[in-house]
Amino acid sequence: MLKILRFLFAIITMAFALYGMLSDDFSYAPLMFLFLGGAMLVMGIEEYKNNKKVSASCLVGVCLLLFYTSFRAMLGI
Image (cartoon, rainbow, N blue to C red; front, side):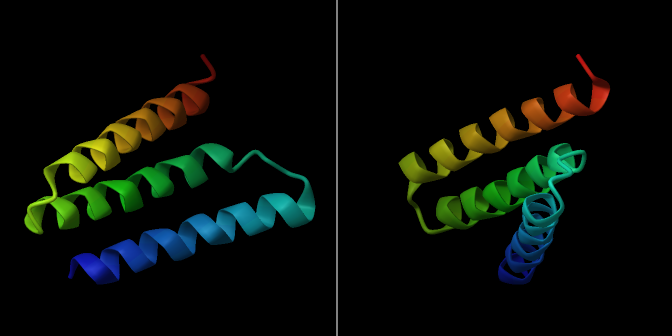
């Protein structure tokens, strides 16, 4: 289940990134960061289940940073 969710988040992130690159419209960048953060969170959970605590905590830290950046950009602060 986690692999499917990670793959889904990665595909959505790449779609937003590709759209931004091809159209020079970066208004969807906060959504791209949100889905990238979701992918990082799923990868962190997978690493935690594999008893790789250091890399899991790094991935969750990056996830929190991406969520913070995404919400801050969406609110226009």
